[in-house]
Structures are given as structure tokens and as C-alpha cells.
Amino acid sequence: MSAARNLFDLDGRTALITGGSRGLGLQMAEALGDYGARLVISARKSEELEKAQAHLRARGIAVDWVAADGGQAESIGALADAALDKLGHVDI
Image (cartoon, rainbow, N blue to C red; front, top):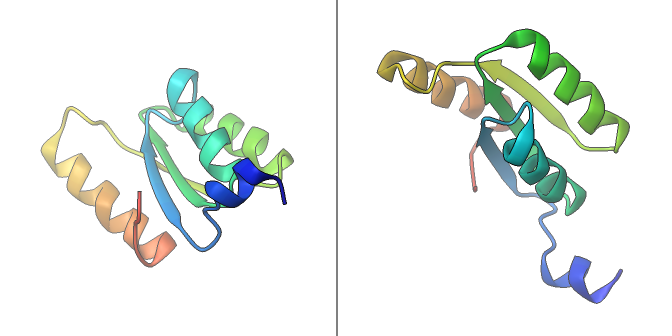
């Protein structure tokens, strides 16, 4: 294990990433997943989430997704509930 991998080891950790289907959110998902975190990514568009999930899984990252609109309070509550259902707990 490299020094960086050892320092930033996220094995057994979980993360919820909003905006995770592209751009900086997807890059954060790649980084956290590469260091061992199990992920739930979220964005508004299911199609983009499916593509991001396939991309991340091809890298060996454990990831699920939940479509949600961050501008809607009820959507955020449903996202939190779904992430907890999928991950058991959220660390990041």
C-alpha cells in the first residue's frame, strides 16, 4: 500500500456525494472510491447517474445512486433516507 493510500485509507467508510454524476462531484466520487469508500451519488438526472455509476464501477468502486433535486427540501430528506438504506450509515 502506498503512503498516500495508507494515509487516506477509506476502507469501511461511506460517502454521499451530491452532484456526483459529472464534473467536480464525479471527481470527488472517483477519489473517495479509489481510496476505498462505498458511495451513493446523487443528481437530478437518472440517465447521467447511470452513466456515472457504470464509469465508477469500471474502476472497481462500490456505488449506488439516488436521483434527487437539491433545491427541494423534501427531496433532500428522501435522499438522506435512501442513502442510509443503501449504506447503513454515512461517514462523509
